[in-house]
Amino acid sequence: MDALTALRLQMEWGADEALADAPLDRLARAAPERELRAPSVAPEARAATQREAPTPEAVAAKPRAPTPAPAVVPMPAQRAQDIAAAANTVAELRAALLAFDGCALKDTATNLVFADGNPDADLMLVGEGPGAEDDRAGKPFVGVSGQFLDRMLASIGLTRADYLITNLIPWRPPGNRNPTDQEVLICLPFLLRHIALVKPKRLVLLGGISAKAVLGGKSGITRMRGKWVDAHIPGLADPVPALPVLHPAYLLRSPGAKREAWADWLLLQRTINAGLG
Ligand code: URA
Image (cartoon, rainbow, N blue to C red):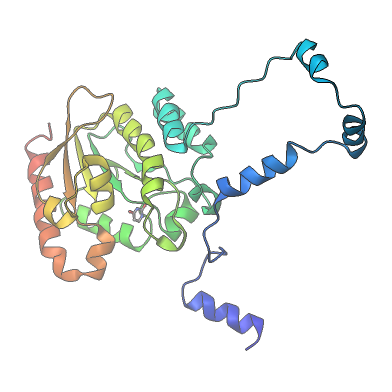
């Protein structure tokens, strides 16, 4: 099989990212590089040091330059929290995400996928993370599952002018894999800050990953869905009622579950008709 045929075959199998098989631990790579750099003394200087080794008395007598404090680089999740908390507007938060380098997903994504819809709406929807088309467009939920979501919401009279929609993870996980726990930890502070700045009256959490990240707990989405629960968002005095629902991509794979989804959308519609608050 020639190289081009092999490549086409891989693309048909869904390999749309040029990534190594084994995960790359960038921190582990960085350390030896630093260690190699630090002792790099020019050979002449090293020879001179060896020739003229100072006596212990000379070392004790010589005033020492103060040792610089080692740079403490906070863990990415802590850094994410600090950076997100410092954003005072949604525009600042978006700019902070654009500048943030603590999540490796950014390296493989084409675009930051921040939000779409009405930033002043009382209703905020939170998905999991962008797919391939969302990544290309830089907008959440524009792919197949997004179009399906639009149709479900249209059936209860909602368009994107009626809500703001965002994701837990703002960069596409390669190959549409689920985000790792570490990626969720890093991205969650930005989502929580986004919610605190928008101050929606109600939240809809699309799928188990975003529901668990925002609400905590160990239950799966099939147990969580279908009822309003309080989401405690740092920076907001009052909890925000949140409705966990089945993710549209799951519904496309499991059409038998559309019955439950329909019940959840009707609950949302009744709540909106009663005045959301
Ligand atoms: N597209 C998104 O933006 N989010 C999802 O959770 C799924 C598809």
